[in-house]
Length: 437
Image (tube, rainbow, N blue to C red; front, side):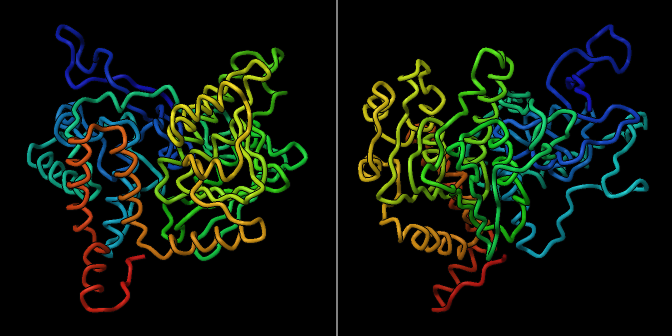
């Protein structure tokens, strides 16, 4: 894999084909095979992008790039928005019974690409216009048209692009390939509900680098499958998660390893928000530091009345700065700062009162209540939930006027989905809707 730098115009007085530095264009080096597992990386907040392949359109020639940046994808300047845009338009096509094809087939097989040395066909203005219209329709299906953002900054490799090896990361092991040894998580799926279990109770389910990569891999596994409707994250033992493994944070590991740990953790937390299906935390026990961050990052959190939550890093001289990101967005500022400054735990009832949890139940009812919520979520239309989840998180960062403008357009685009019309017809006809999945 190589990074090629390109811009829409060749610089004057330079040899033909030589271009000044500009935005990133990712492609395989001549004679090299594409890395396997690349699809999974697109669910990260700032993945190493393969945009033409993601959208099922031809590689863009230099002549296309200006229209591509300024006309076709103006709404995608918001980091992470390309994920929900792609998924919504894909599910819109599948919902209409169209065949889903994400890669071109060729003589070398399904995943073959045009050789880097092969000449490109000259672009025609009519083809660019047709592609632009088609892509604009796709954007409308995802409800992103209302953003009105401009620029190509979203294409650049972001600070949280994966750099580690192993689960869902770039490196010798390849994207999405597990490291050797037993995995610290267990994943089971039934009736559209995937239960991911943190399974390292002897180490208090610490979010070690191996645990984080395994969790990331389980969340990303077949994320596009219509059979996946909701994810539950739970844990074995009396501790949901004690946060980072402190043995990985000593001087012996060095700053590069430390950066990898915190970057991978941040990728996982952002992945939860950017994932197309709702993710539920089922907590039965103590959740501290990054474990508390994991609970705060989930869309829904159900806990037993014996659970407690804390950010105690300050007690060992390591302020919980990254957990503060999720915690500060889940509870009021003064509550978050008291937890961060004192390190003292709060009970499940206090966490419910402050908004960290959705529901608190007796320990013996925890699994039953969590599954009840998960089954209800799984019974809804997946394309509608994906569109709605994306719009919810996008509007939170906007001012009031922009938020209403964005969500109003999302409502219009929701009506354009097959399931949007099916639900209304079913209500008027006094029957249960039949969703496209």
